[in-house]
Length: 401
Ligand SMILES: *Cc1c(COP(=O)(O)O)cnc(C)c1O
Image 1 (cartoon, protein in one colour):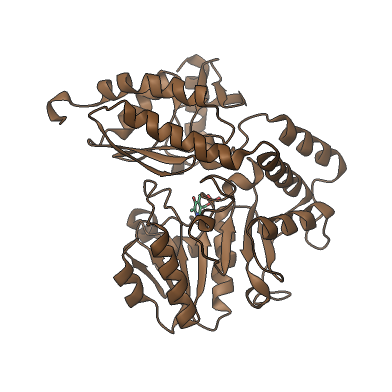
Image 2: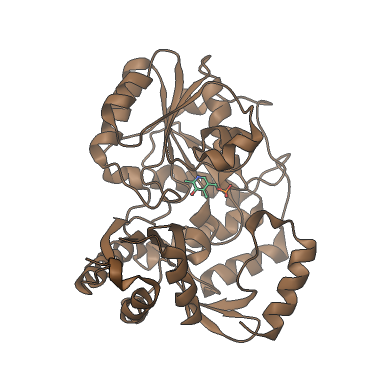
């Protein structure tokens, strides 16, 4: 993408561990829903740092909150607390509609929120965990045991014992798997990394019913789906259920690292007691200020409703292209996948990048879009107008319906 990119990527290759492969671009800055690379090329960011940049780039409310907080106190450790941390905990409990006596543990990432959830589940006195095939819960060794993809998991086995994976959305399999030995059922309301798959509300309702019957915790991983991404504060709210705990991260800090475990009700919130868990950085004043600014802006700017309408506009407009390579558009709100009849998502993403659009080839047949919640329909339309030519260039015409 230009000389400066190439030069920096050569240095990256020599000094940054290769776990991400070689990134295609070195980005220098962003504004709103656009980002620029170091050679000055501009891109419409339809991935938002993987559902993280909820307010896009350089949002004045977030910049102001972080700047102000940086001049006051960035970090105080959990030997102390801060007003921001307390207010954020109260806000998360309130937005989740969690009952009186609910409480929050703050971490620094999604995987750390899952680790806290795993430890919480151990306090039931049981050790079985039921997760779903296709699940992604993170890369730390505890979270990795719940993550399903064998290529991620197998090189690091043995991982924690007692985890079983059931086919996602299969009601009979879930019924068979949950027993009086099961500490927790851990599910994503929509599986993002698996290609944006939704099992539907009935499945989550069944999970609630089974876990209640067996005295098992229902822990929903809202790390990707939470903070307005699907059109409500949390995706579970569309299924009409109340879980025992949720994990949150990605969008919460708008790019500042923060994760959280929200435990619903005093019984669950009281399961981890003084000394049983901790974090040096978790919920520090800087991260809390960022998260409070994100939550306030989502509320003030009506971004929950916008995620719903902009997401529906995206679906309708992409389907109206009636392109033979597109089979469906999955997901909810502004967490979507354009599903292709040929396994050419990576080619489409590379062509899109050359044309100035960042999209994510989450699976060979699926292009994930998780743009900033502030994206306008005009910005979405600019991508949708460019899409047919990208699909034509990436597909094999011999093999289209
Ligand atoms: C991203 C993600 C995680 C892991 O979060 P990290 O911050 O990368 O550790 C866990 N669960 C889900 C559903 C995610 O999307």
